[in-house]
Length: 391
Image (tube, rainbow, N blue to C red; front, side):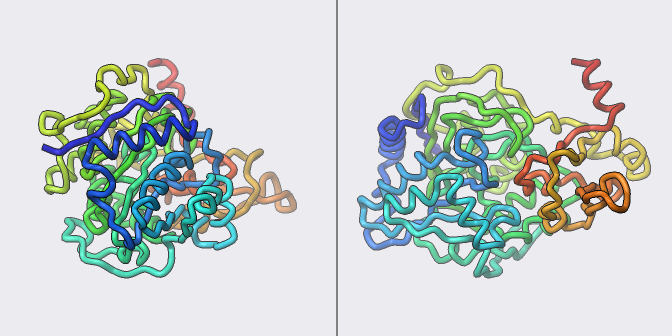
């Protein structure tokens, strides 16, 4: 049976986090079972965008620091890195992101190095269904130990983002957008692609930040939600399955967890997972809101009919004019060229971004890349009216 440690952690006070992380690691054999002196240990948090830790968009720095300190005690060299959409391409912006998310302060305190997972990169065999080869960060491939530090959040495409999904950040920069484009046929196909990526860079260990999770329109615009837990496991699939059970999401609703288990990359059935530490029912959250973009029900619709209903009933990116600063990040990250800068009112007015909904494949990369919250993912006026009526 796979083993998942689940321990209560009520806040991000350093002593509370270090206690919970230490107990969780001890419950799965201790970090010394995974790390030896002199090894390079890569910590892979979720650093989606330049948002303060209290917004629950990124892995909290207290979690990263607690795990880093445990590795340093064992004599390991610690590096911290991710490849956020577009911001990881620019060294200055990546450094700014690390400052805002608290990673720079953690690295300086524990003596760790911050690396970008954008460059260099190498192509690796995945043994996957969709992608036999994928570009993966060389820093991930060269590390002796990779410790995956996901944030528990909802996700507009996959419903849930945790340990398996977090490894998508090992694909460098805008390559992720290209994979979105190649896997645009539907959420099931996109989930297969995620599993291919996970197979190519499977982590040694996983420690999840579920102290304050994100509910609603994740992974970047949802609401912080108190869960009060830290999870740890060598099996990312099992960890995700316990986490989705913790917030009341069914296994059938999270395709990438199910697909990863079917391919033998981990255990998803709770009957085959040993949960140690705190009681699952005691920590269970009963009012966790899913992403509003999940469950649209158009995956198998014939293409001609889909085109007719798409703009009204499929959640699509809509630019909020007053928030847009015309930085162009959404244009750079859109692999299909659906984003453009246009005058707001007339030829002489300032420009703002606009989504060409005829081209858009609803991958939501633009939404994730926008640092100004200037993109709202929602249905058209008719779809929104029907949704409000049903509610």
